[in-house]
Image (cartoon, rainbow, N blue to C red; front, side, top):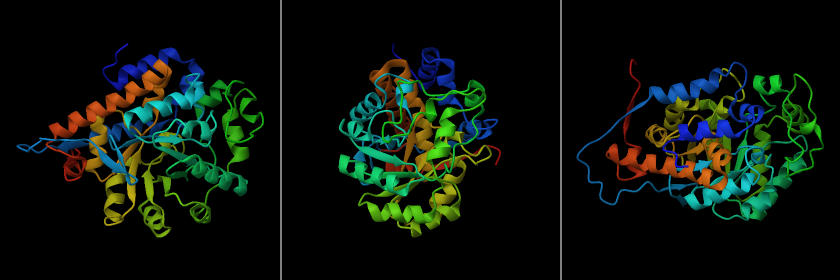
Length: 358
């Protein structure tokens, strides 16, 4: 079936998935205020287009972490993608490869990272800090050896946020889906009423990351290290001092602190504070259209991460569905870019934005 926008894919995915798996994908923490605020904040922003520009040779291509991407976008890390389709991460990674954008392999992937990286394209590896530092650094080494281009170190999950949908469902992984990158035992599969087995598992495995953790990762790899989950300007400037190659402004899709400010609300301030830095500022959270990508670029992002929409496509149609999700975003972004009077992504960075009523 042809889908004309991501909303169509979302509806198809919701129909395709069992209710508790849909809740695992779609839900946020607490009352889901931050989850809803991500979209509301993006919808309040409007771009000021420019007219009478020469759009001959216009392109949506951009350099992302030092290499070309067809669109200033990467697939965000999402855990356990075999929940959504039997091919899981392999199908999504192939879709990203064909779309010409990076794909971020999750620590909690349901396919070993080496198999996903072997798909080709531009694999990145997302790291959660584990209680066993040695195992954390072994994952970094495995990712580098497998050909990943960057380590995306998620720093906003000392433990999993309290996700009420999963608690109400007593959510646990089916036996067919495992944490394929390390031996995690059966904790994530043990169903208990009123508890999330996935949260119980991560509480046992994860440890709060610190600036010392960042230094340990940097010392252990030659790859650029990107910190994901930064919202405070002070943390962003300290990240620069720590020598990282990029930051992702993100509230974890509304799945961690349920009063965390939407990333798009902090993006402009952080980008201004890091003006002149040779690293990259990316945005994650709530991106649902090519127009949203344009807004993020205009506010100072070098690129965005997109998670749930790609999983909608995966659930609705496997590899073809994931590819369609990325194609829709690319078509919409190029359309929005040209209609805003921009012949390139760099021109979009000079656009103005407005929030009505401010």
